[in-house]
Length: 290
Image (cartoon, rainbow, N blue to C red; front, side, top):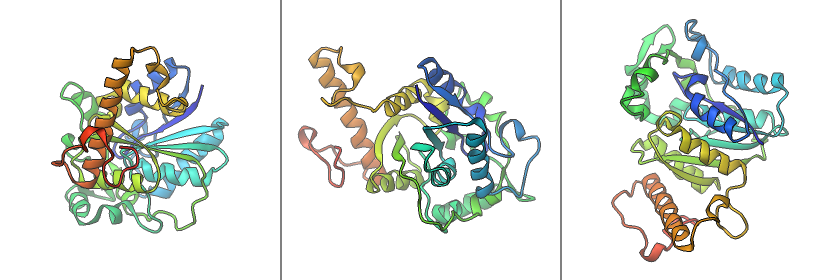
């Protein structure tokens, strides 16, 4: 059993992880889904002064107050910054960091700095004044039409300061194992850049066929992947534990599918959507896993 803390992205709340947390609990894990200040069930009381540091303090204090140990910390999108900083603040407690389409930090730079001019234009278009930002267009969250009404009515305003406050300059302290889950096919240039960075920085890479908010678009698949990650992924033979019962041909087909998903993730991250896979399942340039 693992202790897993699930942290939501901008405009959302702990509610977004409901189905993933339930699926993880059914697998025997201790799943937590706190809401950041001003978000989720706190959204009726917007906090325009809240920034990245306050959200880092939210999750740090939650982990300390709950007395959690050996934590797998999972951050989605904006929460990639939050969870990276929490892992540095609690290096003895957070033993695995998992980013789901998460933003990777750059010391001294804010989310807005990392996003560049395209994100600056998006931010300006959604600034409602008073230090608050309204949610992005619903299509950018990558959820299906059936879940859209349920999802949209739970979104709330988000503090501008969370996007503009710089990430801490301090040297990284965490030695946590690092995993990046890329939701594909992702066309967002920022998300593709984050997947490419994660690959180059040595993250354990996984691909999930899902929209950006996989916890809504593919909750059972995401929960299964998180379960696999915390259980160690593969055994010494290179065959995932659940696959050992499959006939050899089915195992090979499943491995081919995994290879194709990984190749697609890497190509999208590099902006090379139109290239074909290496013949015979060979390695693609710049990716030791393909």
